[in-house]
Amino acid sequence: MDIGRRGLRRQFDPGVLERLALIAFMFAPVRARLEFVVLALTFALAAPLPAQTATAGDTAAVQLMQSAQSVFREVESALTQRRLTRRDTAVACPPSGREARRSVYADTQRRVRRLDIDGGGEDRSETIATYFDTLGRPRFAFVQRGAVNGTQQEERVYYDERGHVVHRLLRQTSGPGYPFDTLSTVPRLETWAQDLCG
Image 1 (spheres, rainbow, N blue to C red):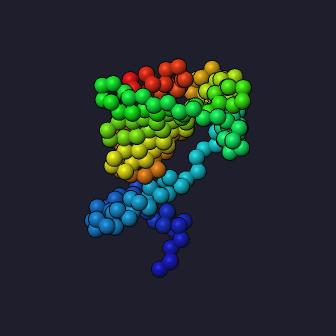
Image 2: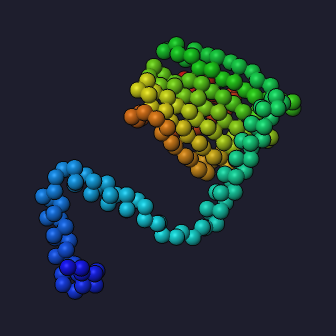
Image 3: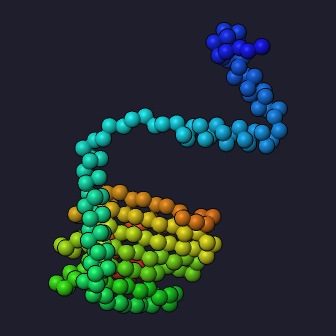
């Protein structure tokens, strides 16, 4: 017998249908339950989100992020064209003795455009690349982290002209997970070793 949705709704109270579905779920094999849960989650996550209206704050944040991306592209282009000079420094962090390294990339006017810091601990590593505009202000940082258990993480931090975080993106690229810290301070030339060694 073919009953359309209308016919089904007329014959059964929706509450009865929900109870029947729950009973069927309870008596279904475990594998069928898992498939049902996965299917339900898929539909829930695929549902479109309600439309949101952009505010003036959102627009300003997007503009600041685009400005930071422009600084990133400008510095990377200068690196590709070999218009930046690199200087390296290394220190041993007391009391552990672990090594931290810094690379500074400056333009022909001796303005620092990028600061790379490599460090970490016994069970993790961290590389921070901070990009500066022509006024010496940090505008973007890209962080790569790794742990001995195979976890890899990337963090992108966008700064405004005063060094305040406008937006932060975290992404685990592989591994089971690790409790990495996020970038909490703006990497600075003057205090990089102290900030890194703690």
